[in-house]
Image (cartoon, rainbow, N blue to C red; front, side, top):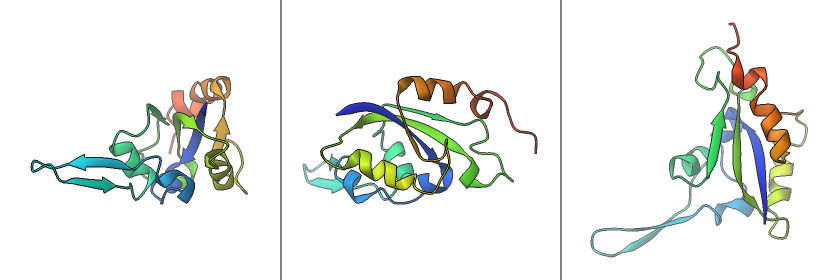
Length: 125
């Protein structure tokens, strides 16, 4: 397992998790009667709402109307496995896209991106 960062577009944040990551983010919920239910998030967004990621930073324009979701980025931090295909699944999400859209990053690359204008200055509409 490697501590890595993944910059994901808001467009893809609302889509389903890759199969290689679905089990990783599944959670067991127990109701008041002790009945357990396994919940697998339907999307990256739902996994985020369930508290699955230890750290997330959204670009300043994440909720700004008029900017396409494919141009908005959040950075997620987590441990990802090469052996279990998790890193490959992230890389596949970035195929055909340019940095910083759906890019696997190390810590220093994530720091550079998070201090870029996308995260520190609002874009004029």
